[in-house]
Image (cartoon, rainbow, N blue to C red; front, top):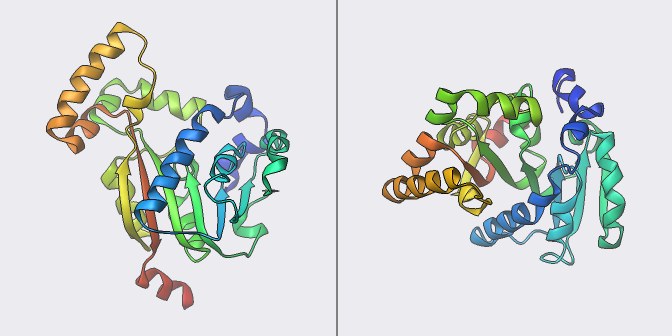
Length: 246
């Protein structure tokens, strides 16, 4: 999104060849996380933009929750546009382009769902985007855990298949936002592992151990075993806004 290196995967067909569904099957779940987070923070947006909207299914799902809200999606990937026609009845504006350079609009809420981990320079991107909305909803996959570091294969897998080049724990994700001038209003683990299908006996057995450890200490369980994501609502901090005005 902000430099050529991270764009190449999405400007070419590399991403869609490795992810032909563009992870559309996860979109209703992500939309639910967004809606619940906005409800918890009592934010009722009249305009929502999703930066890195992909196939557009999150906005499509949110339409039923926000029938009168202006919905806009931006993505730099030409391949993503092949899905946008599926949403033509939902009054959603989709734009093929870079939100930071191809638009100057301001929104009540900006969604950045599974975006930050793909960027060459998340610090630069976040500092540039923080004055473009009143509130932000972030979704971070928490790839970094003791188990993923020991095994290493999971980190290499998400790097190759879906292009994650930065890896986060909860605390690292929240620290990144603070460093970039955001004030966190609400955060919550999504329960990703427990909502995913667990077909094999080995996976179910590991799930039992995970439930026990997380029941004793959720943060410790996630840092040790991973398998979680984080949904965050934030707004530009006073110091961040002051910096932008200089």
